[in-house]
Image (tube, rainbow, N blue to C red; front, side, top):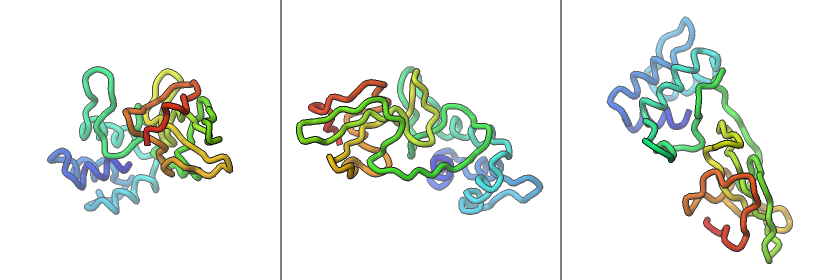
Length: 170
């Protein structure tokens, strides 16, 4: 939802706000006229034609030819239209999400390959938003709170343990 709101605010397409307001119009209600009202209408009516909102992703941020991610302001983004448009809250540190493997480095820090990011539609065959997380020996997150490490082009590291010697990409 952040990418859709951002698309309107930054006018990523000339008709971005008009399309967002139309797609987020609540059943039997008036179309929003500002992003706050649109942002409230979507989670209050998550079942209301979610495919219309999803179609905005393609209009605002068209998929690139060949492999690679969409150029979007926020990650993760959805791969296909959801059945309902809900907001997921996640309480964890260091970007931990969908762990695929854990390695321990010489300092005792645990490194985890995150195969997905909360809210993404990643599968074992491909994903969006996978990162690396680092935890101190006492379990305190060292990597960034929400995303983990994303530097060096890390995206969907796979289902194996990261190499702690080469994983410092933050």
